[in-house]
Amino acid sequence: MTAMQGRVEGFPAGFIWGCSNASYQSEGSLHELGRGESIWDVFCRLGGKVAGGGSGEGACDSWRRMEEDVALLRGLGVGAYRFSLSWPRIQPSGKGRPVQGAIDHYLRFCDLLAEAGIEPIVTLYHWDLPQALEDEGGWPMRETAFRFADYAALAFDALGGRVRRWVTLNEPWCSAFLGYGSGEHAPGRKDIGSAYRAAHHLLLGHGLAVGSYRETGLPGEIGITLNPATPRPATRREQDILAAQRFSVERTALWLDPLYGRGYPEAHLAARGIAMPIEAGDLGRIAAELDFLGVNYYNEDAIEAAPAGAGNPDGVAYAGDWHGRTAMGWSIVPDGLARMLARIHGQWRPKALWVTENGAAFADEDMEAGRVHDRDRIEYLRSHIASCRDAIAAGLPLRGYLAWTLMDNFEWSFGYTRKFGLVRVDSATGERHPKDSYHWYRDLLAGFVAP
Image 1 (cartoon, rainbow, N blue to C red):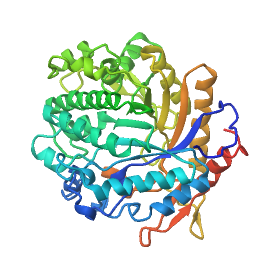
Image 2 (tube, rainbow, N blue to C red):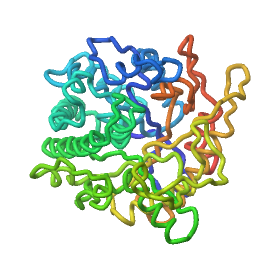
Image 3 (cartoon, one colour):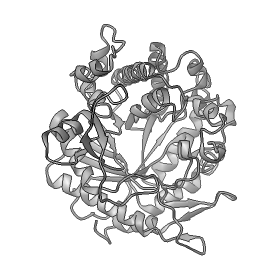
Image 4 (cartoon, rainbow, N blue to C red):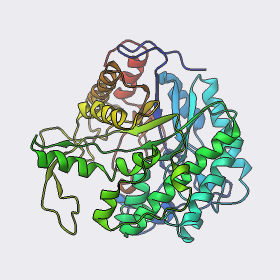
């Protein structure tokens, strides 16, 4: 069952519109039902890691306010809501028997969505690794991939009757390279070798989970969500074109090549002296057939050639551009979304594409009686949805668009200083206040405005 939506101009019948969110960013209630600690709980307690010293303890209080959240979604008129399960709620230590109370909560949430005519799309992992598994080595350790597969099997068994679309991992590049390479994200480790080992084991865990899903015989679909980078060259000079291609590998081909049966990009690994910890059968498991590929898009950079060196093995640099920027400092390039989708489809040929996240943080300073007049966010959404329309017109198999995000939430290392939501959340009371962008998106889905 899907929500009643008007036909959005330029989009086919059956195209699915919705929003995305993540458990640690929105749920709060971190100590309910014996939930175990996640790597983000520990990371947030480390001084100076999160702006304002924030954590996911309060977040949007969605664990206790799920009825209110579903009412907001129903009022918006969306057909789908993508959210993530909390692994440390379901398995506090990352292994063993599940917590039935946590499963019952997610079952109830799926039922509420279904009653509102909204399809639940479930992400199994959105960065909140149980700390107990990190204590045993985390994603750089091969065993973590098998623990993830066990957890995925529990989720399929518990929720398979309610959920027909699954996402294994969200943005594994962030988990590997921000978590274990630069240390900007939990668990805060800084070792590039660990980042690449984590990348392989994240993909292995994904492949094992897909294999487990196929064995269930459930009538649904499973895919993965990446945040590719397909930057444009600053000029048409060959050196800049090649620099942009090299820049894209870590975020794009490093993931898509093995997912689509091509193995890892060897030139990229050789330039860094990296040998992936591949064991017999790994690449076949990673290349398990996908029903769809989710892509998260926020910006597109301009790249130029630069002298290569120890800290810059690819010989690349960011080039200045003329585009406006969001509060994250990201350039606003709507056409880049269609370019990204076209490149991915042309090079890897996924069966179906979804935009699983797209949105913008702005200061939201134009307020009147608690209402946010966020014209900049409306224009961001409108222009990027128009880019999706262009991609469909070009023949790309784009099946859905999920805005990031329903409500202002915990924005990882930025704490509560960056606001992406269609709905403002009062930090003192938890009350929800739809912004102008919420009402614009509602009118778009009802067919009253065009992108």
